[in-house]
Image (tube, rainbow, N blue to C red; front, side, top):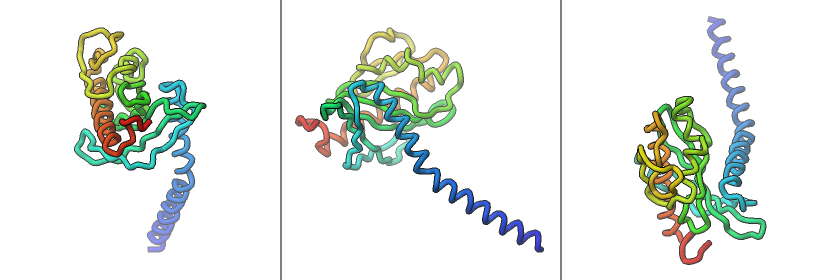
Length: 200
């Protein structure tokens, strides 16, 4: 009986210790995520020197049909001019969730590119979504619905994205995440007057 109580007390304190540790580390972990994200966006939007989190709340419907809030960042140059926009988007891949950071031009008309914040796609196949030869197809593509094709010219910049050989599911997942999020974020930003009518 005494051992049982000792186990209960020990479990309680151990759980409390984990909770306190997590609470203490959470701000640092989040800051590291923000730093990683900003570093990626700086590459996608070379003129960006500062990133301003928009106060307006943007809520879209995910590919799974769930409502989710999206944080929109306005990228500013050293001359305090808007050079583009960025936000994070998540969707299901072949193995697990794929989390992207997506950047667009200042008019929200063309995709500046995307980078992978986290994914667990198959090494040598699905993880090629991180490779330049695949990601470069998105740079300059229209900010709207994209289509995945199995055959085509990767160097041709349009709404058609050529799939990774042997990783169609991962390729399609990225195209869907980018298309769905951009289309719905753009719609909400227009409704709220953030873009359009020379708001930038």
